[in-house]
Image (cartoon, rainbow, N blue to C red; front, side):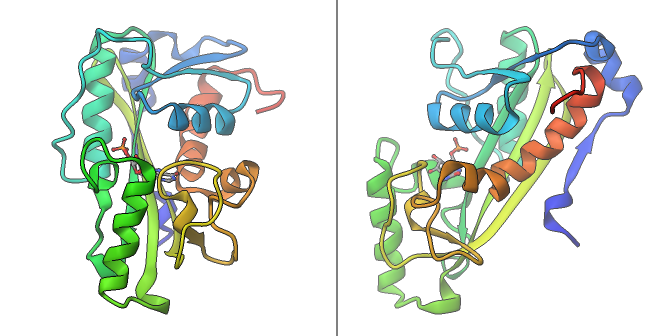
Length: 231
Ligand code: IMP
């Protein structure tokens, strides 16, 4: 099965119930991203393109921090999308994502953001990951890994759909490149000699976990509302 084909959404009738403007034709769509991570918001805007107006939560101090108590990326994405869409009008998309490393039993997984402690920097997270792999003398295929992304789309506290994306690769021996964010400098996607930290952002956006999931989200949203000339 193609692991990038996971998505679930409500029927057209149910969508119209929770999103009455779904059939209006508009030239651009506003989306709130349930995150304070500016890198994520920026990637989402870049991938969705100019027909979407994407904004994160950085200015919304009144929205409380959401406790990510789910056991999967999808559960956490749903929690964030529902909670934020209860507070703010309009369409809300939540992205829960992270890195799974086979030899670490799938860690850091849903704990990717806090792998080296709540306030650790990206470099500290990468440092911890590389030292864990060194301890295990993990080489070659043992460094297999993947990024996963689950998106949940909600409005008024109701989930309209969930959309997943995966990209397979392995963990490099050392951090390389300064593009992107998080674990990008140590992730070597299959078929490439460059890490996500070295690849141009347009290249990462062609096949990243987030791009795969957003492609499905866009396919769900665009026919409903957006005029089609250049999606
Ligand atoms: P959360 O989804 O906010 O819980 O955090 C996801 C964490 O996974 C981020 O803080 C990054 O450390 C990592 N992550 C998710 N997506 C990416 C990516 O595209 N590149 C690098 N790291 C990522």
